[in-house]
Image (cartoon, rainbow, N blue to C red; front, side, top):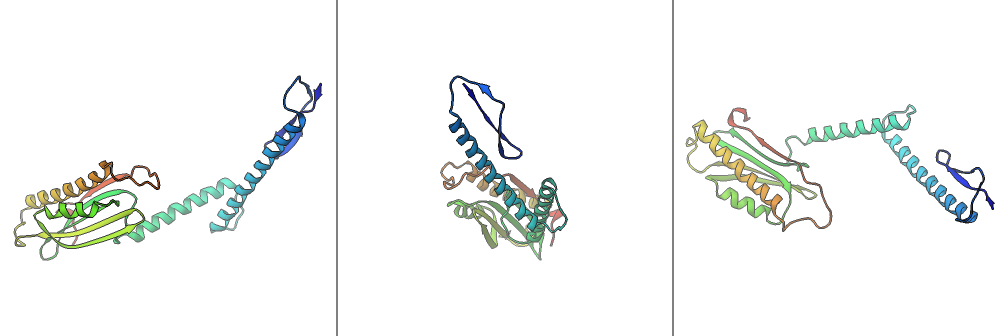
Length: 223
């Protein structure tokens, strides 16, 4: 029996007749045609969706000249990077949680020595109590505390001062030692959350956060 086979032109998305060949048994010509037609329709709808998304991207790029798809994607990537850079610049000096887990400690003088410390991480139910207990164990008093949240991210910033008189920490070595102690205390709270199996978001699976620890000693502090 001689049957006429069909083949799909991937570029044109059209069904074409393939050279005839002799076959014994197999899928009937009607079934083969239906399967190829269904595939052709699915390909056509996929291309339409892709072209619609490209049209949307063209409307977002501030450029009126005709672009091919590769150039358009490059322009969009460049624009997204620029927006991200501008957003980070705008957030400087503001208490905004970032994507990276982070501990920062710095010192500054405002008539007396102050320690400015911050921790940024994912929220967990015990986080605030852990922070409070850890800071209470330090030989410092809390002057102020601020907290900011963004989605599941949380950032705490503390200003701490010496519990004794303001001249008790004139020695640079003592300041360095206490700064290290603050840093280690906050880092231990951060690591406790990472190691705890009790808290894991059930609604979504997130990749491990990058961790960044920043340390400023008194020589690099700002007033």
